[in-house]
Image 1 (cartoon, rainbow, N blue to C red):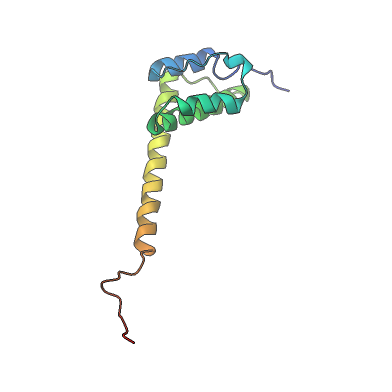
Image 2: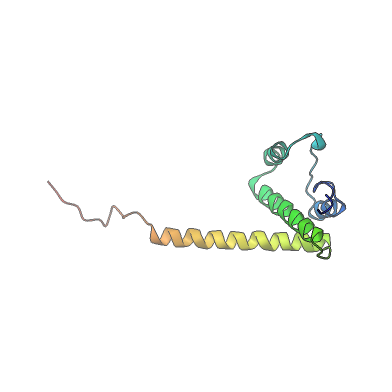
Amino acid sequence: MPKKGPHLSFSDRAKAVWNKVQFQMFIPNISNLNGYDIFSHIAATNNDVDLEKIVCLIWCIWHERNKELHGTKLKPADIICIFSASHLDQYHKATLSTVIQNSNTSKPPDPHTASHTTP
């Protein structure tokens, strides 16, 4: 069984990532909180745009930690930040494309051009 590493928010690499992106991630008594409480605090203290970036960074840190536990070479913090930004950009492009496609295929009928029948 792989050795359990340090909590994601306390690892040296995670700290390096947070320093690169310059997010203030101070969470009082974090070691006494569960994941839900930590996320609730982060969500309450950040706007939606920053929250998306933070969640994506957390996922990237976790993903890289898992890869490292299975023998992959460590990636530097700046590479993790670049990957996170790229991943989030791809997500935004994909969701925008989906929104545009859906708006083109599921438009409600235009009341000005619909045929009307009079009683």
